[in-house]
Image (cartoon, rainbow, N blue to C red):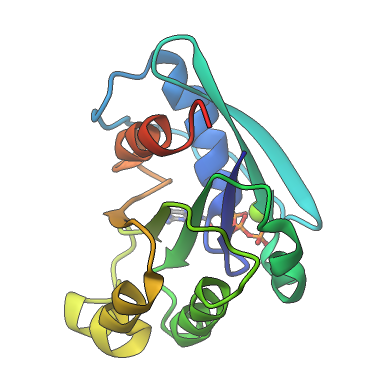
Length: 177
Ligand SMILES: Nc1nc2c(ncn2[C@@H]2O[C@H](COP(=O)(O)OP(=O)(O)OP(=O)(O)O)[C@@H](O)[C@H]2O)c(=O)[nH]1
Ligand SMILES: [Mg+2]
């Protein structure tokens, strides 16, 4: 079971909807292009999605809504990998998002599992620059305090950019464990 966390509206549900479809005809590492934009509603509680990866494999991903932030910690122990989504178009949210991630990483409930940091919504016109990510999101501090294998990815759940790399990551880090 993989876990996907991140602030309200960061795009977790849309990413999962895309992965469900994208991986049906996935070729590792390729990007997918979507025309239409499915609607999502804010997740209250949990959302379980099965993502096909590679050949005849699948990964169950559990999303916890951003509104459940205070009790995310209760769900960490039975996960084999963690994806954390940050909305790079939301300057107001990014500092709080950083603090929530640092809290998670310092939690004794979080096993030494691989972490994928997803910078989502890169299709938006005014996204955080690399230097803003350093200053507002404290990327270096997060990398230093992670103590787990950490990978970062730039993604647009809207256009599909980067989704293929999420599938590859899931295949390498969340299957058969
Ligand atoms: N432009 C753009 N919009 C996105 C992207 N990803 C998600 N959205 C939009 O952002 C809004 C919130 O997306 P959700 O997937 O519902 O967010 P969430 O993280 O599941 O939110 P909670 O369930 O409340 O925690 C929706 O209107 C999505 O269509 C993206 O990559 N680009
Ligand atoms: Mg959701």
